Length: 69
Image (tube, rainbow, N blue to C red; front, top):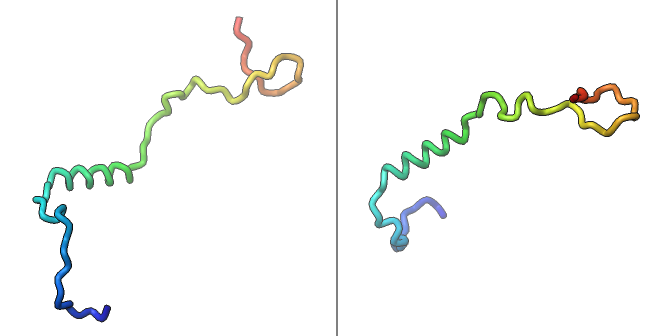
């Protein structure tokens, strides 16, 4: 390609003959912008997680969950 106009015209698919729907364009732009946004807030599981799992007694581990009961 040398940047010159060609004498033959290209045929476009029929989708290019449809009218432009601005509501779809707005929705696509809104979705793209929403995906860029970083979510924030507390985790739904905050306070319910433990820093360690309970392997059973008699192992001599430093961090074990509290005994219930």
